[in-house]
Length: 213
Ligand code: SAH
Image 1: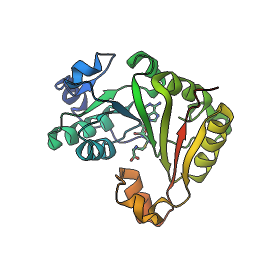
Image 2: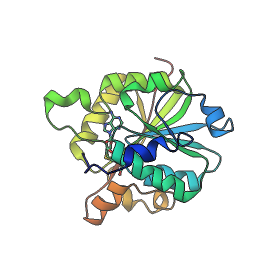
Image 3: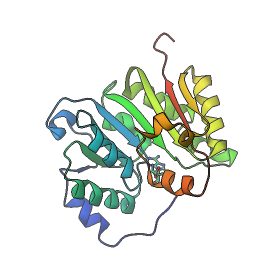
Image 4: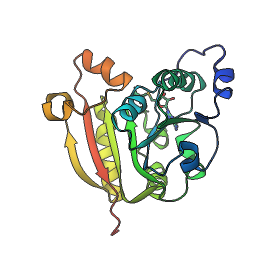
C-alpha cells in the first residue's frame, strides 16, 4: 500500500547510515556482534521489528521496505527505541541475494504483505516462487518463513505456492488472536492492530524449507 510522501524523508534516511543501509554491508560489523539475524520483508513503519528487537535482545533484526516515507517512519521508531539490535534496509525484497550472503539469515518474516489479488500480478506477491527461491538461498538450511496476514486469498495462495515449492508447514493458524498462548508472545504489526480491531481473523503460518529436497 502506498503512503503519502513525507517531506524530508530522504534527508532523514541519509543522516543515519548507521541504522538505514541501502546496500550490502558486513552485517556482523554493522550490528557489532555475531548474533543471528532475522529479517522482515515489507516492514512498513517498523512496529514489528522494533517490538521484536525489544523482546529478543539476543537476535538482530532488519526491516526492509521499498517506500522511502515508510522507512523514514520506521527510522523514527528505531531511534526512539534506542535499541542497537534493529536496523533497516531501504530497498526491495526482490534483491535479498544482493544484500545478504547465502545462508546468512536465520529467519524471514512476512507480515501483511501486499495481496496483489489480480492473477496477472501474481509475480509481485512476496510468496511467489521466485521470491521463495531467493528466501531459500538467503536462509540457513531448513530455514523458516513466518507469515501473518488478514488476507485469506493471499494466505491460501501462499500455502499452495509454498507447498508446491516443497516447503513443509510446522504450524498454521486460521484465527491467531484466539490462541491465548501465542498472544503472550505475539508482537503486533501496524496492520495487524488495525485489522484485528475491526474484527478480522488473522492467519499465520510457520513454513520451513526442506533441506532434503
Ligand atoms: N509489515 C507491515 C506493513 C505491511 S504493508 C505491517 O504488517 O503493518 C506491506 C509493506 O510491504 C508496504 O510498506 C510495502 O511498501 C512493502 N513492500 C511491498 N513489496 C515490497 C518489496 N518487494 N520489497 C520490500 N518491501 C515491499
